[in-house]
Length: 430
Image (cartoon, rainbow, N blue to C red; front, side, top):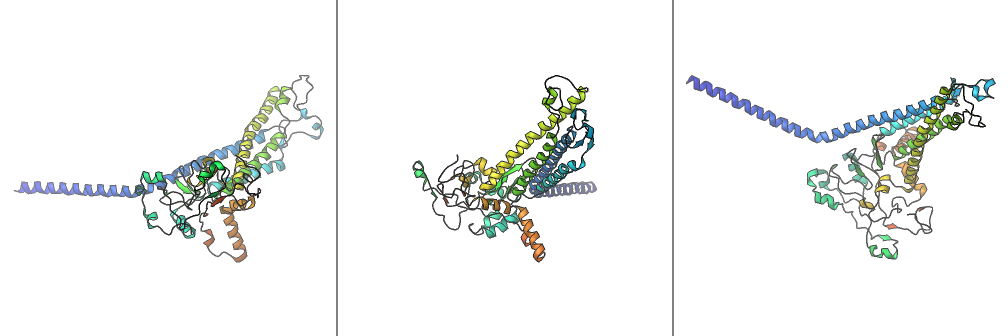
């Protein structure tokens, strides 16, 4: 009898232990399920930080190497290598001498300013569409059909593949007028088509909202960006509505800094032609006389040539990027819209390549909008308000995306060519 009671006690203890293990296991699984929903955003932040650290390392290396090559360029105006007696015969000058500090100060200051601009741009918000931002946007988006309770409550699994393929749009509160496009006779059959009817894009299942027009979900950052332009891997961040103007300034500072550095490099008389003709000045008559120190001459020439081969291609790339983004600013367009076009972007499906539906108000207004949508404009407004009437709170710090709208009418035969320089009554491009 005692043995039976003991066996029963052991069995009961074993069952209770198993039950507690099961409960702990279920709690652990439930905990894992709760935390997995946050892993998505956590991994995104970690990946973004890694990109920024890598981009910062690459850019610092690029600047340091450019600065070092500029300093190592012999017989440039950065070096005081000639005495008063040697000014008439440059061949007697040293390749290096004492540093000309006033000349060195200018490129050094520009490099510091450029690095500060890089850090400011890298830490900026390109226009991430968070839940709070979308709530503020819904308050000012009058063309959006009311408050849909299903928008904020729908989970990612509620949207099937068929819905995504159909590109669900939320209809505006009032029906738009038919598209009135100046079509050629061959395009008369398309006269009944309409432009994009809403101020929002298709439903984003990953961010769980209807993003504003011109926004895009960045696959690298895994967030929706307002007025998306592109994702810059060199910066480790996106370029969008809130930092596009500062990106243009960053390119401009790169161009100026490279021009100043190349001005120092080009002041050297150590050219490849001078070395091939065995004359430092490059104006030998062909006698073929060599320098007494051939090794030093070869090193000095290579230093100058390498500096030019490094800086000139980068300057050309910066020039091209600056020209592209200047054109985008003038036309109130983005790189994403211009490269993808009507074939891949839903709200541009009824437009042509050079229509630029968001930039048909003229050059001056487009440039003002390009600057006004950047955070730099809001910072200047806050500073002006603080200087004039004192700091009045954080109301001006609340950012909301622009409410973009596709016009109902695209006039491709406008007489105001200054407002439509790419497509007007007198000429058409592309």
